Image (cartoon, rainbow, N blue to C red):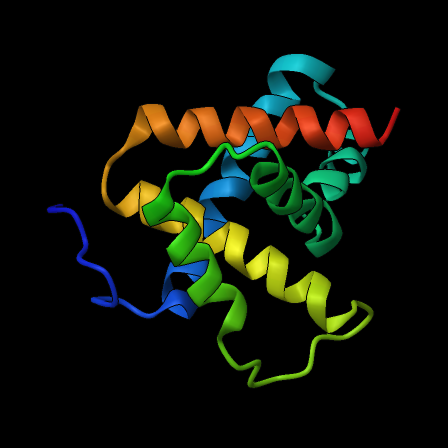
Length: 133
């Protein structure tokens, strides 16, 4: 797939695919590092894939100045997009930060920037693991 131009696809659609990509990546990471007890893997994966975990990762990426200017613009667009359905059990700002993270993952995936995608995901995993120790 060719690189998506800015604003060519809405950030909600990017977040939709980004959520799925991140979930699969985390499940693979869990299997490789934590064994094969599926119930335990699922419970641990929630730390990473929940809106709270994704929001922590997004905030850490920004704080560490880990993102390019283009990535920051995309994340800001995603974060500022109007929430159509009110999220349950999570604060709106947490939800917005999680959506920005998912949109970033989705954009990198659709643009086939796999090495950058892996860098971002590895950073996110380390961030969530540090916060949970």
